[in-house]
Image (tube, rainbow, N blue to C red; front, side, top):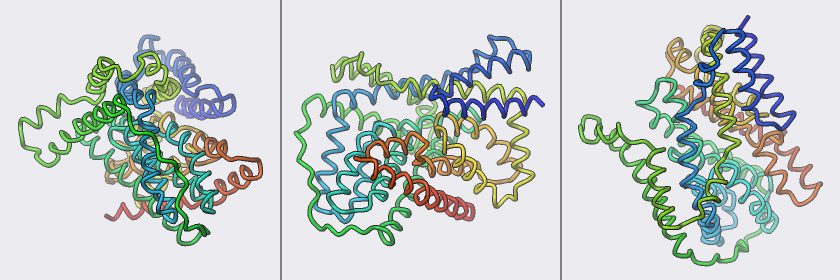
Length: 429
C-alpha cells in the first residue's frame, strides 16, 4: 500500500510541476516530508538528511567554474567561430550545427544555454540554405544533449553522482563515458538518415556567418583554464583504466574530485578577475538543483518504503531479459516527454538498476545508458523544455505550427525508434 502511495506521489509531483510550472522538486519535498514522517514514522531530521548533498555540491561547484565563460562571452564567441570556420560547407549544415553545439556544451555551457543560443541561429541558417528546419532542430537539440553528457559537463556530472550513490563509484567514469559515446553515435545515425531521405536543401552557397571579433585577453585565459581543468579531470581516470595496478595513479584517482577541483579553478578565475563573482553565482542553475535534489529526497523515501525494490522486482520478473533495455528506453522516453531527464527521470530510475542488473544478469552500464538515451530521445517534445526552446525560436505562428507537428509526429518517433534499435544492438555487443 505504501509503495503505491509513493509511486502516486512521484507521478503527482511530475504532473503538478508540468501543469503549474512550479518546480517539481518543491512538490517532491512536500511529499517526501508527508510520506516519510507520517506514513513511515521517520524523524523530520532523517527526511532532511535525504537531501543529496554530494550531487548538490558537485553541480554547484562545476557550474560556478563554467559560468565564467558564459558571463564573459567566451563560449558564445567560441560557438560563432566554429560556425564561421565551417561556412564553406552548407550541405553539411546539420553536422556542423551538431558538432558545434556538442563541443560548446561539452566545455560546460550546458544543454539549455547552448540550445537557447544555437536554436534561433540554426533556424536562420536553415532559412538561408533552404534546409529542412526540422533537421536543424533535431541537430541542435542532439548536439546540446551530447555535449552536456560529456563526463565533465553538467549532465555527465549528474550521471556519475547518481551512479556513485547507487554503488557504482568504481566504474561511474567508464559508464558515463559509454553514455556520452552512445549519445554521440545515435544522433549521427539519425541526422544521416534525415539528410539522405528527408533533407531538401538546394543551396550550395556559403553560410552567411560574420567573422567574430578576436578573443580578448580574459577570454583566452578562460579557455586556457577550461581546457586545463577538463584535461586534469579526464587524464587521471583514463590512466587508471589503462594502468589499474599503478599505485601512484590509483592513489591520485582516489583523491580526485571534480567538484573540489572546480572550486580550485573557480578561485583561480576570481583571482585573475576573469568574470564578475555576483554574475557567476547568479547563473548557477538553481531551478535544476532544486529539482534534482527535491526529487532525490522523494526517491530516498521510496527506497525506505521498499518501492524501488518492488519496482525492480516487477521489471526483472515480468519483462523478458532481452526486452528490459527497450522497456527502460520507453519508460525513460515517456517520463521525459513532460519532465526533465536530469531532474526527474534519472533520479527516479537509476536506483532500480542494481536490483534489475543483478536479477537479469545484464550489464548495469547498458541499463543506465538505456534510461538516458531513451529519455533524451523525447527531449525535443514540444511539451518539454528543449522542444519549447525550439518552438520559441520560430519566427511566426505558421512556422511554429509546422515545427510542432514535425517534432511530435516525425522527430520523436524516429529518435525513439533509433534509440530502441541501438539499445537492442548494444545488448549483443
